[in-house]
Amino acid sequence: MRLARGLCLALLLALFLPVLSLQARSRLADVDTRCPLFGHPFTAQAVASGDDFAAFDSDLCRRPLDHSLYILAVWTCPYCFFSAYQTDYLKPLPAEFREMELRRYTLDTAPAEIEQREIFVGVKYHNAETFYRKQGRDAWFLYDLMLRGTYSCRITVVQGTAEFQSLREQWIKQSWPHKTRFSVEEVNLAVAARVAQELDEGNLAGDSVDTMRYLRADALRRAGEHREAAAIFEDLLKGSELGSELLRDARSQLALCIKEGDFQQKAFEYLQQAQEEGLVPAENATLSVYLQGELMRRLGHPGEARKFYRRAAELPVQQEFLAALIEKQLGRVDAAPALKSKDKKKRKGR
Ligand SMILES: [Zn+2]
Image 1 (cartoon, rainbow, N blue to C red):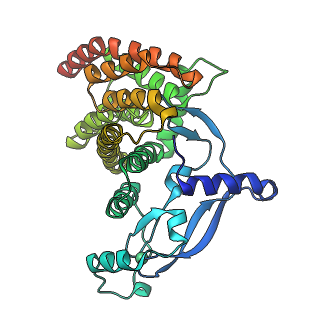
Image 2: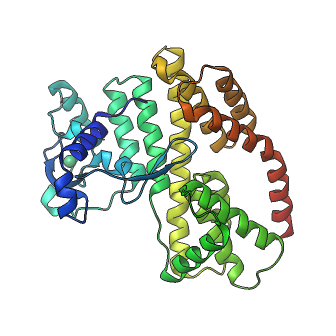
């Protein structure tokens, strides 16, 4: 997959700044910058010393141990929310494009009077997509951007209360017996499955049922199963015994689930377009068909996903890891109908 230039820069920095990583515990650097639209000054964060990745998810979302390249790759002006890859902040916009964009924005307050705001990751990638689409970037570029958007939503952590965190740790220990391999996706799927089983068997009672449902939804979202997670969060928000803090978190989690789904839908559409227009690099042909399957599966269309996985299985193997991954995911969608009916039964039982 083509690396965005912002990411390339970060990786280059990672190669050339090993000393910094030994000296500084934090591997983020503050960078004073200005948005290329209005020139609003602000401090952005960049990855200064690389990032270690624990594992890949099945849709190739790389899991950072620390913070994320995906989230930091796009910078957003905290005043006007102009969003673009880091590298595009560091060079001026073409004059006529800037003119056109400026007309879209109205500011009735001087920037100095506006507080810097916390920016929802959904806004970052949504605005970046608008910017690059207007710039006429091709469907392959936009697909890649949207895929990063889905990853960014997934890896945005909603910590929860201290009590919830220790509950989660306890269930990870109970549900993940493997000591040697670490995959964020698999650990969370194991937690979700284990909790579902306990709920099914009625081993939990009283207030803790809602907390356990929250724990299950949290694990599902961390695994990128945003649709299943969203359904549970929605249910909990309609009425539950959760405390006010977890309820507030459930709202944030639901927003992330919805945005992850939106970006996945866009990623799928751009990828289709990129294929039709012959924009997919030859070395990524098989991988891109596989990823169409992954996007369909996560969007809740296992039948469509199966078709793409099967098609990918018939194409030449271009990356060694891919053959095993295709087989594994085919197994997952084949098992999906059974899981679904079990879920329905459980819902009725509540
Ligand atoms: Zn700005």
